[in-house]
Figure 1 (cartoon, rainbow, N blue to C red):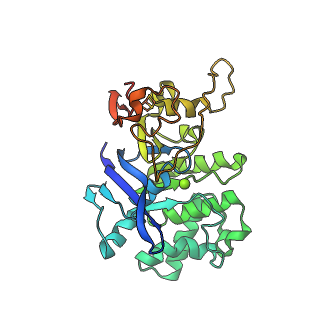
Figure 2: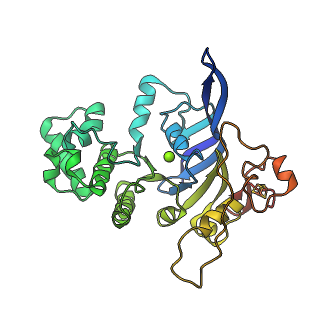
Figure 3: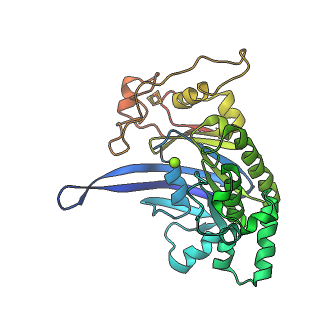
Length: 320
Ligand code: SF4
Ligand code: MG
């Protein structure tokens, strides 16, 4: 399969201002040199605790944030530094579904206007054509035509997320970055929204970058999964390989935290000590060494790089 997205050595640093003159006194290394690919039609899950850089990665790919270094190749084109009309044109092809469907819909706009906005921004359509397209999108995401004239606050969280998804689909994008799309929803509606995203992937030929803090959510969605810790990619593998044989001690801890109904499969939970250190002042060597149950002395000195240790399974840890 062809590659849709190729991320090479991406860094996104935020300046930290301080002192009387508000000068830059340091940097938060939100994303610190990560590389990965997503093939056409594939779903890559991106997982890690809050503050690990997964949302920043998504926003940098969409060019909502400026990358500090590295390259973003989208559908064969380097979009790292494009601006103006060129960036606007490229943005047709990638859309975002946000975490909080309560905050992401404009309360003064009708649903019809919210969903049609991207089309109105990019294309000329008469009113009837536009309405027809919106009604079609509403039906694809499982909402009734009456939704057209209503406002966001008249809907439940799950329905609002469907509206957000319809809007993201309006321009028939190639890539959708879904940033924790179900974490604000009740557990009972989470799987409905996940199933919808899966169905739409086939219908609309979509590629997904699916961001989550929880390995149990990405399990049912992803072909491959990347695990991030403090701005670093620590492991990438196929779904099967990652759950069957997690290699990185951090991934092992995340997997051990997934609730397991079958007591025979239940493994002992690995509880990590301490909090995630500040990305402004990350630990030297392996960024995980302050919490790693397997850490050796050299872990604080040598920064491990991502290596392929089995076909398609990469890990950044000196144990391999
Ligand atoms: Fe743990 Fe060392 Fe591996 Fe880092 S490099 S994950 S500290 S064993
Ligand atoms: Mg986030």
